[in-house]
Image (cartoon, rainbow, N blue to C red; front, side, top):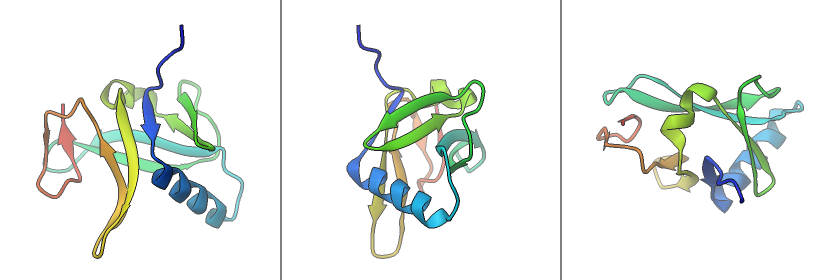
Length: 112
């Protein structure tokens, strides 16, 4: 039986991650995605460069991108899709998360 990935990534997000990793100017193992306390709804996503895989990180390889999921964030990210959106006044990674119960008005934090 095929194991379902914790999260998926759109073509736009994959292209942006590849571009950022290329511009970084030093070798990277991939990116790490996690969740931390903060924002008006309680939790915020974070995306950072990953120089290596953490001991308990979940690894996802999708569309040529390696994503490490912080083990503390796994239960919050199940079924999430990561996208990259460019708008006139704001650009950035967005997350469509079926586990969210509420999101703040500015869209930068959520709760489950």
